[in-house]
Image (cartoon, rainbow, N blue to C red; front, side, top):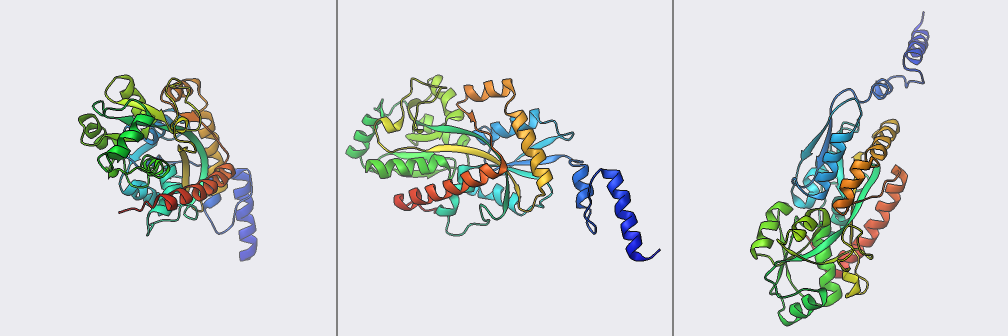
Length: 329
C-alpha cells in the first residue's frame, strides 16, 4: 500500500468515526467533533458588578455545553486590556469575550494606538443585550431634572466632574455627547471600574455619571443617588417614570450594548454551537426576568447580524467622538 492509499484509508476511518468529512493534515475536524472538551474562559473587560459582568455570569451559570464556563475579569484601559487578551488568544473556541460598545465600537476612534483591531481580530458570535445608560447625580447637587442640570452647568462652567469606568466606555462617551449637544463643560474623571466611581459619586467627589442602568437603577431606587434621565431615544420599561435625556436635549441618544466575540479564525461550527447556546440561555424565562428588572433587553442575533451592527456602530461613534473632540489621555 502506497502513501496515497494509506491517506485515503485513514480519511475513510475518520469519516466513519466522526460522521462527516475530515480535513486531511489537520486535527481541526477532530477537535470540532468533540468541542468543548475542556472549560471555556469568558473574559469580562471590566471589574465585577457591572452589566457585562452580570451578563457573563448569567451565561456561565446557565450554559449547558458539557464543560464549565469560567468568568475571568480583566479590566483596564477602557476594556482594551481584556479585549486584547482575547484578540491574541487561539481561535479554538475556548477563550471568549463579553464585548461592549466601548471595546468593539468606540475605542478605535478614541485611542490613537489600539492594541487590536476591533473587527479583524475577532469573530462575532452573537449580540446579547442592550441597555440605556442612566444619568444620575449626587443627592446634594441642587438639580432634579435635565433642564435644571443644563442651567446649573452653564452658570457654573467646569465646576462639575462626571465619572466613568474608563475612557472609551459608553458611560464616558455619553458624557461627551451631552457636553457637545448642550454647549456645556465638565471634567471627565475616568476610573478603573464603576465600583471605584460609585463611592465617589455618593460621597460627592464627582457629581454625576451616565452609568449603565443595571448598575445605577437599584442605587437610585434605594435613594443613594438621584436619577434624572435615561439615554435611549425611548423611556425604559424598567423605569417608565424616568424621562429620556432627549425630551430636553433633542438628538441625544446613547445605547450601550453587549455581545459575545471569539478570536479571529474560530471555526464556523464552533461559532454556530456557541450562538445556539447564547440564544437558549438568554431566552430562559428566569434569565429574561432578571435582565428586565435590571433594565437589560435581550437583543439576540446571528453572527452575521452582529457583524453588520458592529460596523454601523463603529461609523456612528467615530462621528460622535470626532465632533466631541474626546481623546484618550
